[in-house]
Image (cartoon, rainbow, N blue to C red; front, side, top):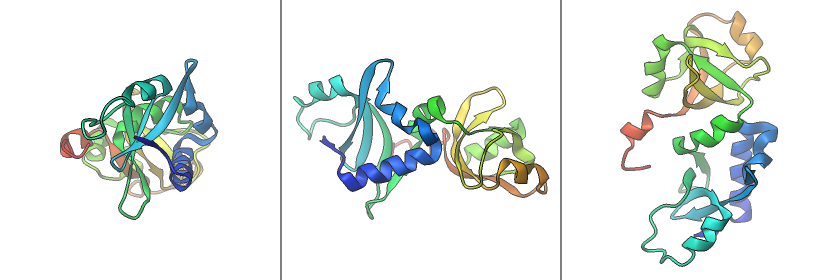
Length: 179
């Protein structure tokens, strides 16, 4: 495992700030414990700092995973946030999007959400802002990017896209081997 390079760190925090906004700095310290991001085999992991010292003793070939995988580094050295980071985003995201029960399954199969499926949305949501998607029972289902601001979505047609899909918990089943 290694620490993030400067350009990787900049790209990761740019992606996280898209979803977390000003709360991005809060991910480094949770309940008085220090947390860090580390890279292992083109995946970025989020783990406690004291755990990092312990795993330094393990051979890299024998290490499969540690902590929580929050992102992947693509072949072009871009950063892609993965669904396993949902707990991190759900705990800190200021923008939330609730999906009606009739559109939950469509979202979980990887489809965008239309205005028909919009249950509620945070008041200050901007266009193209990252948000966490919840069921009407406040269960985090995934995350995406708003297609319209809150004001625009209230005036839009019922079949207009309200949220672009990024990741959902259905990926645990669809991409079981890749996660």
